[in-house]
Image 1 (tube, rainbow, N blue to C red):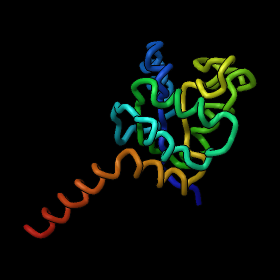
Image 2: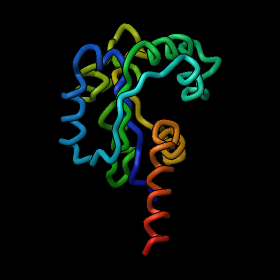
Image 3: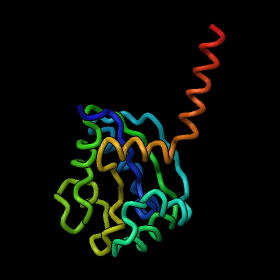
Image 4: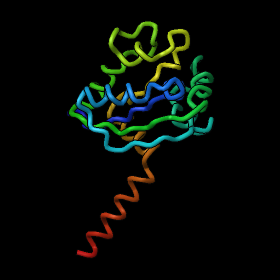
Length: 153
């Protein structure tokens, strides 16, 4: 059974081009619930860690440069079959060949595949790892607060 959570990232160039509101509106239009969100800045080391599975691929250096070039919006989205549904909304990786109506076609840079506006987890296992990468500290705090609350009852 497919999970209900996925990670979405709004990449730096989409932020700098002021597309965040339109992207979040689309998320809501597609009936995703946004459970957690934050704006952060990835250092190159963090970008390399997050995208480690792409190390050695020709686009990897550009991906690291793009992802550490400005603010990144990280969002935990919730909906039945979240990973697959989000990936349908964002479209294929390359904005030049993404389907009409997808976020990558609308907001991506067709001349630079890594400037594709948004990221989506590839599968449920990646979603869990990626959510923990961006929100692990917050999730641990919530868990600890729940434990304290349960001890007091």
